[in-house]
Image (cartoon, rainbow, N blue to C red; front, side, top):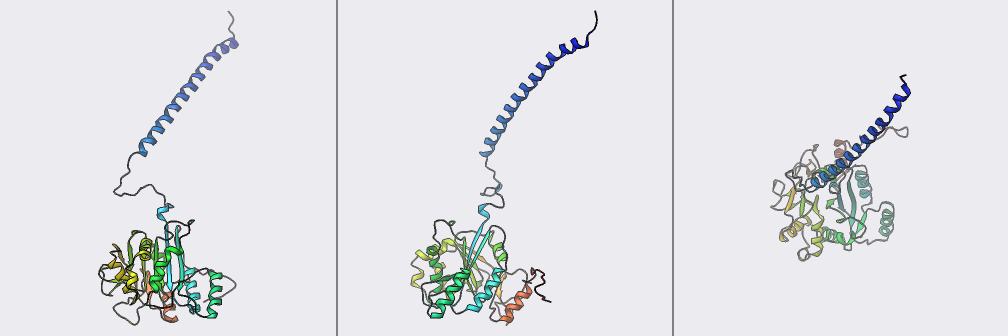
Length: 318
């Protein structure tokens, strides 16, 4: 019998065909089983509490909503302080804050009383949109601070804004230099409710529960601003040193259970030396009592605020 390679090849084709089909069926069955196991595993893991010693979910990314911080800094000043406002706009407008952080700096004063103010302040608002005009007569220690804090819930009550609109609201003097990144870093680990933050008075004290925070710049969580609006306590006691009076409200209302003493990252300018002063140093959040340009320039030079100036043919600054 003569051997034929062609006939042998035909005999091999049919078993090979069925073998390939069997492999495909097996692969299909295994894929179904794997997907089922994977789905089961996901369901099981979703119901397992991932407890790492914290009540917070540990799988949040760095861009999580919980990582956002919204801060309002209200600088209490006077309507006629045009040069000071323009200067402070440069100071704060050239500072950077981390991603996910919103810091709004607003200038706060009472009702306008002069014709030139009505024009010049209106132009400022049109250009910068960074002014809050309170419904009050201009004063320092007769309720202006109360009007500022208690007005905020009604000013920022738009329905299309986050709730709360700000996690923290701050009152600051216009002779205080605030380093925004340092402020934000100090707030990150702190509670966002019932917080009272600042530089403790008297100056030698380090206990934030004894007296009150200095008027150079103190901060509270949003819920305290809402409480100030609704409470009768501050309405009965408006006059007196505004920072001390504010501390009285907090104490009488049993607020500020969470307190943070930012001393000595907040301090008065080192000259003239007092018990409230400190040398300029890197670990600084705020410097107070910058009453003249010389003190401002010394402070700004120390923190090298012009280091990011880009080279250009348009100017030469040695």
